[in-house]
Image (cartoon, helix red, strand yellow):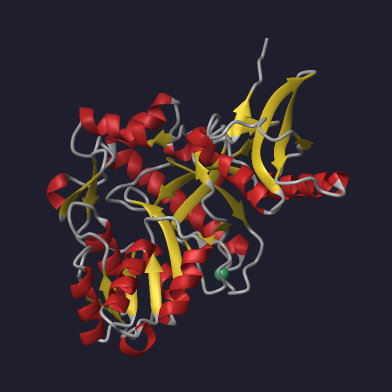
Length: 411
Ligand SMILES: [Zn+2]
């Protein structure tokens, strides 16, 4: 759909789920009542800002008080097929007819096709991912699922080989275990196994690990992102160009302190709203940080995309109104091999935040001013915030120093 038409479609679905959830979910109703809202006050994605974000801790607390789902369920419990249990513990209801699109869209976008034979190595116990979401999504595409679950690596290798499985669903680290085990068994990963596509989730996927696995097996690996509560929130297409938001979710990037939406290109917390009538969670705060982009993707999908997951809200520090993360400090340093130790220091000067990137160099460089300018450019590129660079003598930055040292005072 063209962007405008898609937004109209999503707004219409939003009005529908708000009406439904207000009527059927005790938790959603009391959330809206607490800020004196009626369903008619929520007409568009922008209106969602009026509803306070529900954080995971709050969901857990409400579930403890009012088990099993804290009043977030949108159907009577006897109409469910499953009750799942995720770490926390948090309970998730499982519906009789699974009709969510996201994970299936992600698998298809990553190259899964009807007739593929897939090992599903996600855990089938307690949690909803393998059984409810991945299995049903494979079925929706027309793939055949082999419900192997996690573990038993040698047996998994034999299953993949004997049943000529060509698709993998699981974590990237478990696929690496399979590769190592198969090699130990004397197998040639490309010749003896026929894995062609991989759908990975539930873990970070470093690019180095992705290319290593793709190379070893001769396969394509794409990742998806979501949570057990709100399910799929993003998936990669073959362009490997960030993660497309599925058509049955609303993903906002917000300031975690105020819950207000930040525009495209700004880092903030991923907050999600689902159209799932069984578990209609409105504005769930994932605690994960990312950036949303609306630039067109060459694959032709018009949905907005989440750039990679950058970190957790509780690791982030605000500088001049923008969030910065320890991982970004590492990324800046990794672009300049001359740097030995480094640290970003935040201070206040004339009521303004200042960020100084302090670096110890491995050895003296001929033109330190040029290197300084290069590092300052990397800071702007990576952290989207201006920072000064200061070279300090060896031994100034203690071993194991904080990546971001906040020395600001607000007297
Ligand atoms: Zn795309």
